[in-house]
Image (cartoon, rainbow, N blue to C red; front, side, top):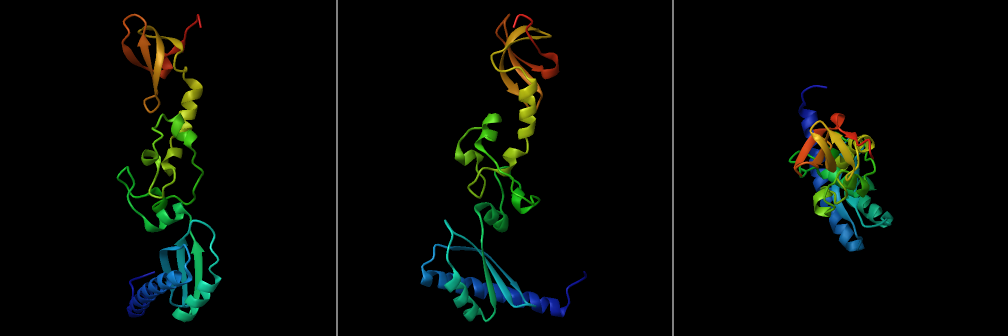
Length: 206
């Protein structure tokens, strides 16, 4: 709308103090109630004096007594929202294994389901440390290129198929999906030759 005025700066400072106080009070009361909860973030709206506390937990938690104590301690309305592992990563932010900011905290507006099958189709190592994101779940980016691999699999000869290339006859030993290529072991000399998918055709004999 415009540059922040004195009233806006004062409201921001009040909100900051309220958030800090709410975080401290929430952690103390969680210990007193012995609830398996972890605080992930706190929001405060000065106009309505409402505090929203985001938390994660291994299962559903009955926090009705906690809300009452928090409302009495903070002298305002309190709302608790449980986050999933992906939501927590979105809220916390961070840097992924690719070296860029997490997709969930920058541009993703919805979490689409990701399966191990997508990693298998892309010939990725099924090591959880390699294909898991900051949230501990499968990386959202596994879904980005998966349609390309599915389309390539429908058009390309399978590994082990005998094919004819411009350099001669050979056997398919691998695929290079990003490069739209098929790796062929030539029958004449045994060398491996990357061939464009458009130039490879299955053997007439096959």
